[in-house]
View 1: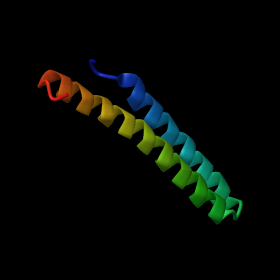
View 2 (view 1 turned 90 degrees about the vertical axis):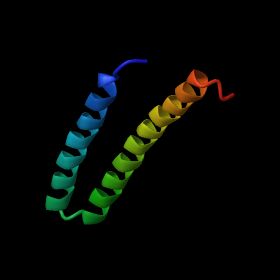
View 3 (view 1 turned 30 degrees about the vertical axis):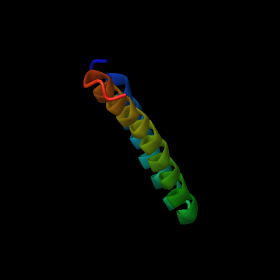
View 4 (view 1 turned 90 degrees about the horizontal axis):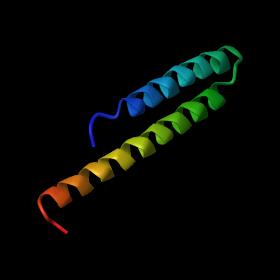
Length: 67
């Protein structure tokens, strides 16, 4: 298992991309699209985190023999 630093960098990269995209779209007057882009990014990060939480629960079940 161990520490997964790649996940932290991916989430940080998505956050930086979303902030740039939000700024560009807002200044272009496309507020609706900036909100949609932010929502898409949040859902993407949430899916990544949920997958890791699922792996954590599976590891705990295996550790305590809770099949």
